[in-house]
Length: 286
Ligand SMILES: [Zn+2]
Image 1: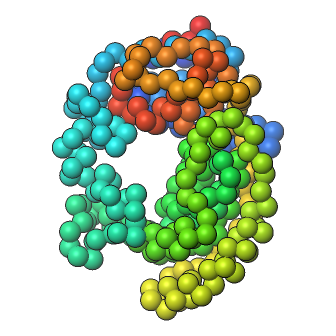
Image 2: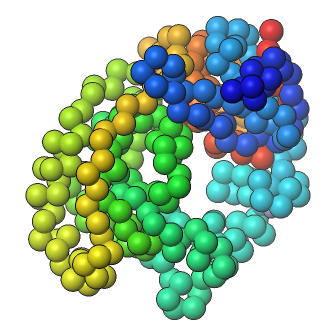
């Protein structure tokens, strides 16, 4: 906890943006947000209601190798990294297209460490019901990054490829996207996720049985987890969602009204900081 208090005292920073660190809260305490600019960190919860200004200096540093790049690819990478790193390959977004077995993984060692690990298929409520997958160690970070208000892990699989195969089945009957405008308006209705899980598992019973025959009975395990509720620090949700964009205007400022997902909610509009990974900014809080 002492770490959180020390970062909260800082009110200015300069450096390339990283996605915010979000620590889960509980029913009484909302999630704790830390803005990261280079090596510098600012605890944001303490500054809710204050004037916050971010000014993009014009420089973009690749989030992987640090070199400057005129344009950002895949939310923060330089072009050479974007074309060569396994984490930037299309199979990360579409895990069912994993091609490791063909000997064509861009970085087999990285793949073994990140993709050949237990993955979880979950239901979440970010702007309504959705299905998603993530590495087991990424929970609950993944849900917080998406601005989900509820989540429920439903299946655990041995690797990323299998998670993609399962998610593909679910996408026949449920969406996998978040409507970020709806998510930021804050009027998302709560869902009975265990009931949704039971309904979807019943609807996909035959498809899941066929997949288990293909990849092995033990590879896809049903989880009996409890639903998780996630709480965000928001003074007031916007009634109309307009977005700021450093590529169009280098200065983003206003009164900080809330934090949800990877978004800063100002009284002047919202900004998705994840989208601007690597953008060097000067941050000031008054
Ligand atoms: Zn790079």
